[in-house]
Length: 149
Length: 142
Image: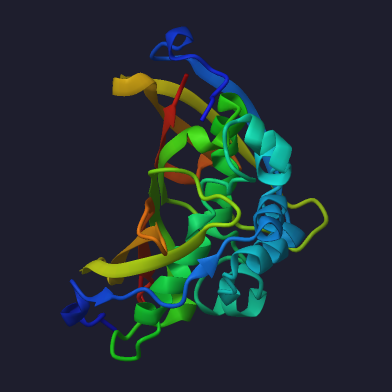
């Protein structure tokens, strides 16, 4: 089932802000087995020049995928989430995400295409503080695996 | 930011210390909870098989998170990673047993960039096969 190409270029305004918690960063770091002190110990993070514990480089996915869900779960898009696998992911950071940040994500559907019976959708989430400071951009390409692919 | 590695000490071809990271079913449960990604193919064998997978597979984002540790452990300050991208080329299949699987990660500097930054290529293997394609990070060195 092909995805609706009319969604290309659609922008989804930021939803409610996300307050980055110190414990959430620690939980995420523990889940990926990473005991780097910069994620766990505020004093260690400060010694590196950060105001508080920082988030691992892939933490932004927690915000960006949640924001993208507004688009991905739109029935008119036609995405069967049980058939979705992650195809590509990239992040670029203006600065690391820090505990205490209050962040918002604006999402745009950059591309939708079909190849070999699979549908591919690329979303770009621009992450800023509520004050408008640029923090990161997260680009995700998801693949909806075709019945015969 | 204060990476412990100095740009002057790095050349194209510099290899980062290799690392290996375990992934088992408990890892997947913890990652699902911490990330909020509850896609059933990462925890429900029945659904995974129904959609044509050999078994439950690891979240690509978990693999991506573990693979970059080779860079953040080397650089010292994880905040020195300014870009990181991967393609998920092969699923990491996680059996329902007590041992799980191991991700073997190597990395080396491939390019020296402006402003004391370097590009690093990361290779992540499971079962001796590459699971990430074009895995690259750009790191701000001191």
